[in-house]
Length: 252
Image (cartoon, rainbow, N blue to C red; front, side, top):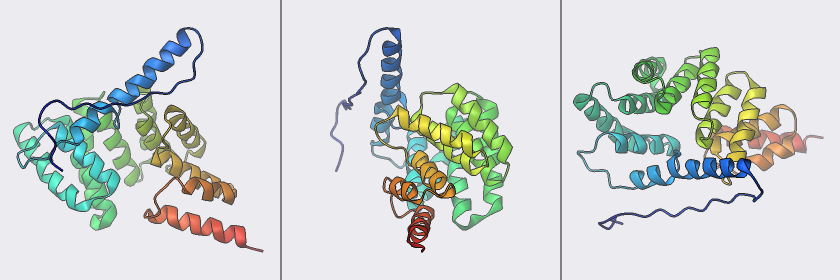
């Protein structure tokens, strides 16, 4: 469906328990900020829904790339790689374009490309991070690339740094939770996952993935199965863990 001309309006509701004092006002401000400016907030969602012209560049390319990675849409990722590369041709130091190429390169490495893709992704991410150490997009790409190159402690440290920069971003917190958990700090990963859940009424996929894995590893198979119900069963790892949990529960 073609988007109609003119200004767009995104309406979102923020639910918050009512109490007295500055603490409530601060919590409300943080909740509204997450809804407006977060990765899944009103501003970015309006931008991401815009049609993607062949001449697109910049922020629209990055937002679509992030959505394509989240949806695991390889066809769209290939198209967006060209979009991001075109952005870098115009602006060689575009931090978002570098971060977007890193994110796509990581996924290409995961789906058969191999270590060279991860190394190239790390180069893009590191360059973006050096250009702007306060960029969440650059830092997130760096953390993921470090993890896939088995640089576990640097990945965990980058995650901590990102959460200090932006503690109110629930999707970022959830992603840091998953990387931290998989990189070997299960206690901190689970703590971050709980923090991400507390920020939003809608479970973040990465935080729910931590719940599934954590419950399975501690032998609480019923909890692992229950947590997996929040996730799509087209995720091979989650589907496998769910089947294993069901099998363990049925063991005599």
